[in-house]
Image 1 (cartoon, rainbow, N blue to C red):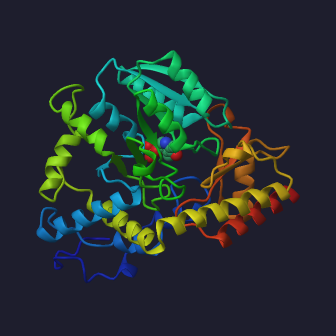
Image 2: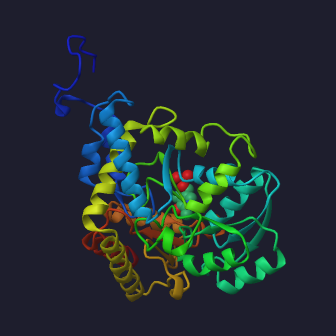
Length: 388
Ligand SMILES: *Cc1c(COP(=O)(O)O)cnc(C)c1O
């Protein structure tokens, strides 16, 4: 479409007049039952149509202030939450470069592919990473952590995955955080597929840092990394201002200084911030506890119905995740073949395993803007695919 130079704002162009030739192709695989990106609620889609504004205008400052307040509320923290352009993976780097120094010893508790990547982020950033591997499908237990801390009493932080998206296992954060704190170590929690879906209370658990990405239970497009810092993490960061790691874009101190003036250190990713705000409003209206209950209820139905189809669930049942369910791929298929068969039969998109489980398990996501009826439709589609 040629640009009509007679128009100045574009606001008077009907969306229906606009032809994006690549759009119908993409529309094929948008019935997403994968653990991210997750479907976008209408309010989030609408928010993303909002026009650009001068990002340091007073109205934008009020918007930013309230968005941060809501984000703190959803983290249940009396600390601070900051939001940067980036994806969940940037969230591993942010606490490392702001709260640690190169060479610091840390303990990485690995029970799946994301824990593995968190450990590797630490290695790439030249930390002294002591790594503990727990069998995939199992949770990190209090005993695992106590034993590791006894052997590595000098570690400054423990890297922990709240919800291991690759295996569908949820680790017990309050218990593990207490053990880490008793040993004098901070806890950096990857809650990319946890927060917003699975109970997490930063203040009550004492966890020092919670990192997440916008495209999972936050029901937004990918592109924002959200990081909550406890009051004690903030105090520690103060001691490292102008010290420790070289850093610039993800320098917490720069974001804190800017936030005190109601703004961000660099241009705010406006469209994604509008989306995030709309999602926070939805969560606040539903109530965080109610959202957790919705996820737990839908997850229980999903596990029960998939088992009833004769599928073997993969995760240790005592720690099965309420945001992602994993099951062994039915006989006669690789995980990729099964995913393709479900898509061909129903148009519904499910996921394959990761790393060594790539071919042997399938994963389904039920996080964010998810309802029982959609999961039941997906379960029917899986059942019909097996039965064919
Ligand atoms: C999705 C995910 C990530 C990575 O997020 P990206 O947005 O792909 O960088 C990290 N950790 C967990 C637990 C995840 O589920």
